[in-house]
Length: 396
Image 1: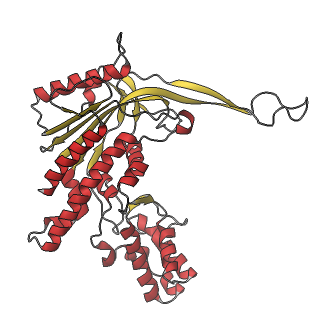
Image 2: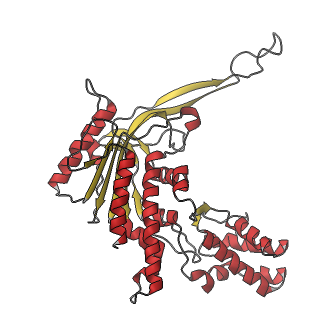
């Protein structure tokens, strides 16, 4: 089953996601340049948002970091290992970020890794046992990090946190298993042609004119920042079966179902439902925080469509905006974007006979979407979706 979210969100002047030169990211779509927010920026904003964190409160979440060595060092010190042995263990842990097990000069892994608390504890446990077995710092130094990360103790299945189950991970180390993401998030693009603008700013010394007539005149510094204002189309597709499989692990495919297996799958389904709702709420209420202290572009979506499909055929409606939206008389950019979106969705749904047993439509405007259930409030949309997911996921 797929749960898909489509949103139209108009941001005031902002620079939410910038490129290497500091300019707002953009792209060519439909033959014209559009403003763009990368998938990576959107996913991080969702994962790190207070909305997602609050919704998943009480559940362990993953940590994306290169600081595994320091995490391991602290755990081993707390377990009573000497400072010298803990430092050696931390150096060994720095080799866990690459398949060759090459230890790093700096106390960090070669690559950024998305780790669960169980992953970190397993690495610390393996290094603790190796340190005890070695007996001395000199002998522990001789133990290869590659052999440690290839140990049987690290190759077994460990539970995956909901955020890693959602967004997946790929790590070139045998100590951690890769996870196929259950959600696909598109780059957000503006529904219209993009125009960059520049803000020229100055900073004035607060103590200017306090040093007499010879005091320096003018600004203490000058600079400029690039920005734009855009109405974005956002889209994401979440595979509920993939999410449940990630959460329950390989036991899901066991041939002989046992009571333990049934409990694991049932727990995974409950966690999946909670995770789905947390993801959708965070997708609606969060945004990348680039330059927000300068622009405070905290606008909410004006249109949200949630579709649930049993056929696993994801459908993006980005082509609603192949022809860039232009402002018409007695209308505005948001109204026109909603209208083009509505017309495209209805046309594609009809032409391809797209089946979605649940279509929920929320908008702050008067636009109505044929074939979708109108939700007067966002709470109404969440309640209807929660009820549907409870019925579907509880029945497997």
